[in-house]
Length: 129
Image 1 (cartoon, rainbow, N blue to C red):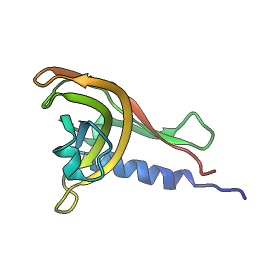
Image 2 (cartoon, one colour):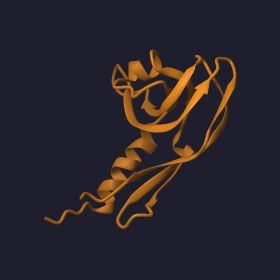
Image 3 (cartoon, helix red, strand yellow):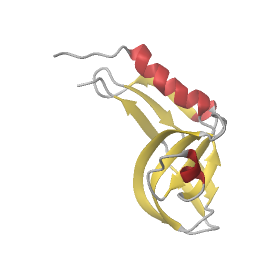
């Protein structure tokens, strides 16, 4: 059975991230809640704004749509630990904030009070299969 999602639908989801992400956090795991992302799993965080994203635009795969999260350098590490995920958060969503998107990253040991660089990375939505 064939499936299709219009690019405007995929773009709306990506635009939600662009419009509402105000924080990016290196995490020790996959946070289920804003509280987990900003407390028990947080190693380093940086403020983000709509200008820190490019897109949405065509992805590499046919019919896919993507945005790029722009790189940021010299982010102070708050807690020592191994980063395995990066979370994009909305701190203004309701009373508890919201986790908008979480991506796996290359596992990296972070040392408190040092600095870390976040490279640019893509969020890609594919056509349904």
